[in-house]
Length: 261
Length: 286
Image (cartoon, rainbow over all chains, first blue to last red; front, side, top):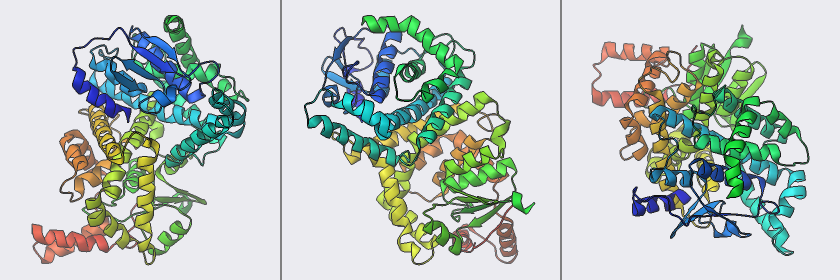
């Protein structure tokens, strides 16, 4: 969706224009409002920009979701253009010749795309499932947070509306019939694959971080630190030592920038 | 030993392919790679009734007392039973298989479904007649529509929001599918199979998608044209067809019998493959 907007934009700016100085990064309020899947994506994009050494101005808006061109957070405002979500933002940065994965060959880049897609589908769908379909988490966390910025009865209606959207999305990709155990198994299988691929490397593709590292960090850091009614998930992530170490490494090196920003 | 035999039920074939359906081709090829004793039944009427009542879509795999349908379930069943060639690969290679499987399901499948089930020309001229003919009465009236509805839901639902029209979704899914085919082509490179000399479930999966696009008579398909440009992918597909899924023994008998009597030129061959395609109730194969 947003990538179509992105395509038009690529045609217009050409590849020569460097990073503008007035880039604004929009996301919902981090402490009170943002939901689990949205925050993973925000964190991934911020980590990616920080890895690329690109400056941006963080703007917290209660209605970031409504402001976004694709209806999803986070999104960037660069001059006259709006770019939303992880893939289009990465494509935009790459178009400007600021790519952090330029040292990869074609095969490695294909592998990276495959892993990025796997993380997007499995972890993002799992986060959607846990926060919107799982009754306990929805009632105790997601609904109050998502509705927190709206007065009653909107604080009930809007979360319900979003829940319907999430349900139809998960239904289309066959996740709605899964039980919570199935979902946790999917997460484990995905983490196992990531862990096997990472093995003993510093980052997924050698000594330099790539967008895949940023995306994995965004999801895992969020899943490790989030407070959910039961801690099974956090416990199972701790079993993948190399992934946890990767998160610690990225946190130490890049997250300070994120917090300062 | 009868317990060890896998009973696989698939949609029947056409255009020189053992089956026209990508999932059926994948499972079949994977069983062949693994050297598993497989008894294949091509959309047998009574079985199709039963699977339809149980809301199964083909392929359906029966093994001992277990019955599994859908590609993902069948592959994970085989994995849990310790069957299949995938167990010979290293954990890093298995991780690559999962990643590329996710890539194909997310990026290639929507365009593939759109191409066969939503694109009006292909659906009316090829897909609907074929699936209607392959299903017994009265299922022939329901099966194509049911699969089409599911396909539409799969394509449009996850991408639906207020600012994007269905036409834009179509542009997007075809663009992503072509990128996905390019990534697969880069990953395969000059190798025989994705992980060297031995085929894996990823090869079976790619074969399932590529073979029908290559073999079906599709005049104006951007997806098929793009596949034909990825030479190593079509090479992979032909390699698998020749080595693992040559025409069934009855097929050979039929051909050799015919060739003995008549000289088959190109025109005759088309008509002949049509006859051949219709005449396969319970072809088995092991």
